Amino acid sequence: MTLGPKQLPDHARPRTRAVHGGTRRSQYGEVSEAIFMTQGFVYDSAEQAEARFIESGDDEFIYARYGNPTVRMFEERIAMLEGTEDAFATASGMAAVNAALTSLLKAGDHVVSAKALFGSCLYILEEVLTRYGVEVTFVDGCNLEEWKAAIRPDTKAVFFESMSNPTLEVVDIQAVSDLAHAHGALVIVDNVFATPVLQRSGDLGADVIVYSATKHIDGQGRALGGVVCGTREFIRKTLEPYLKHTGGSMSPFNAWVMLKSLETLDLRVRAQAATALEVAEALSGTPGFSKVIYPFLKDHPHHDLAKAQMQGGGTVIALELEGGRDAAFKFLNALEIAVISNNLGDAKSIITHPTTTTHQRLTDEQRDELGITEGLLRLSIGLEDPADLIADLRQALAAAS
Image 1 (cartoon, one colour):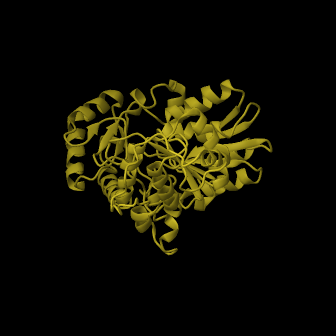
Image 2 (cartoon, rainbow, N blue to C red):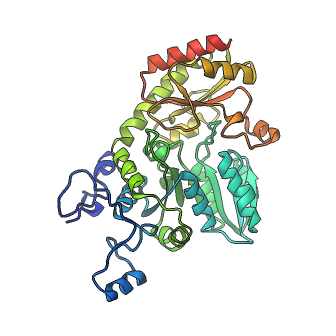
Image 3 (cartoon, rainbow, N blue to C red):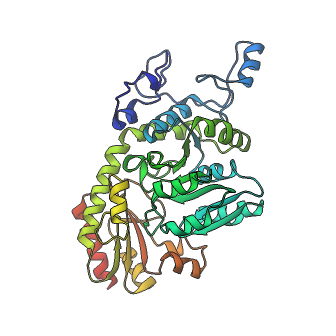
């Protein structure tokens, strides 16, 4: 007995889809999704095996590197939340970014990318793709004139983070998509900071949406995972052959963890975004902070665009301390609630010093250009009481001063 996503009412809203979407039940009729911890599958006959290798149906599996019932439940559920035709789950967020780009591109192709990216994304664009003959042009993601000048008739794809890591610049997805589509280029968006709860990038023109499921989707620091969402044509004809032959697939256990997390994703992200806004407003203008960056603060340079694109300002705040690295380290070491780590989107508030961790491989010139200063901290807001977080941040600021 199976219950697939088509049996949900067409009018089901995202929170309902996050609980029920993609569910497959065995003959036992279990309520909680089963974990199919198998890498292989048995065929009734040689003829059935032959037929399945030619073309597999929705509930027909060959090998866990190609697909697995638990992984498929996660893929269908996240595709429903994102509003795309299909999705493919990967071993990590970076496996998703790498696969989305590498599966599409070949020597001689041209890509235009925003320069404000996570360090590992920059590595793929600067080191991996160029090594194999792909030409990459970097632009200021918030400058539409630079996108317009860089996108050419032979541009194969554009890539950007919808909200940049860690300085929280907001890219106009619809405008960049229109420029790319005018030249037939595919638009690939890393939407991890916005999440599918606060922004559906496909509705704004993106063709391929990438997530690190390690972040908000898991939300509790337990498992690695990633996912690529897009059209069925892209997922099955371009992405799937690359992933099933190179082995970057998600494990069934991790898929089960992510499935259970999706049930509370909407509740968690909205609560975290509300707290992030409260914390940002409380700290804005506080002596000791040269900058408090949050897209829904009125002094954010892309405030109007963020309000137009997103249902919330996200769960991450950027704080820049006066006094540079020394003040930043004193601040970090004085915190009593937020923990020092390099993840984000967790139930626990997490704070990071990008210059010495996530973005340490960038040159000083690159960091200066992106606004990643020695005093900049990235604060991922968790599910703690907002008053407790504000008090903790204020006492840490006093200690740093």
